[in-house]
Image (cartoon, rainbow, N blue to C red):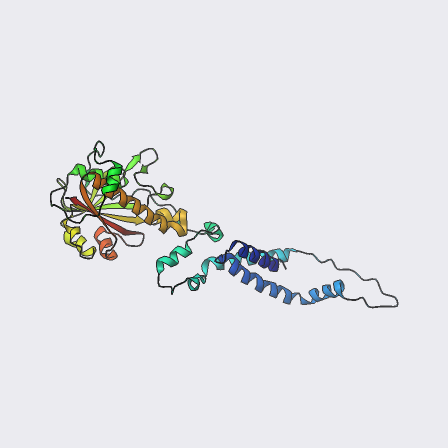
Length: 346
């Protein structure tokens, strides 16, 4: 009976707050209803006897014998156990069995992005999902052992365009002069992108949900004075570059970028990747939203810094994921490339 009462109350709450996607109510309701029917079937004799005593007409007898009245518990231990099992079963099913929200979308389930946006909306089910295992928090900084490290010049002290001027004049620039970029310019670009601006807490130039910083920054260097061409990882804590592969990768990055030739003509191509677990352990379903937002923040920082320094920049979101991940040595799952931003002299 308690199970049936739970179904009724949770149904009213669901309709009242418009929580039709609330998986806990849907599957817990099915389990509770089934257990209620089972409970009635197993105790049908007692139920009917109680109803006859409570609502039936008493028979007239010449000398009615005294009867012993049974004590009927409104909510015994067995009923409490049934209710607890129903709630637990509904919770597990609601989290493990996919819902039917797919059919409720206004289009034919072809847009994976739209599906994810619907499924990652906050709600009570997400709050209860906190008890599930989303993994632990990984290391905040990524480092490569046994690689050559290059210390970058101090990025501070440069006076370029004002923020207002940079915002007004920012454009996507795909034509570059071919002149080499200086190490000082490369250092300022990296620091403006996501360098550490507050060392006590490790806060960076770009905002990050929960200050978790899932985005990593790589530089495919083509033409920077004093820096060997190759693929580098930005060591944000040390403000330096870690050499992953030396060589000319202009053709490789152009091919990965769907043969957009300006990627091979720029002085440097910055590639933003994400270590998703850095955000997933805390924000669960919404982690992917926050990761992409952070990549956008960093991209705009690079745009404005390049514009302020008189350089050209162009962001690219169209690329061959597997080729670009292979170029950076990423598995494409735990860490994957998100964004390319080319920068060059104009």
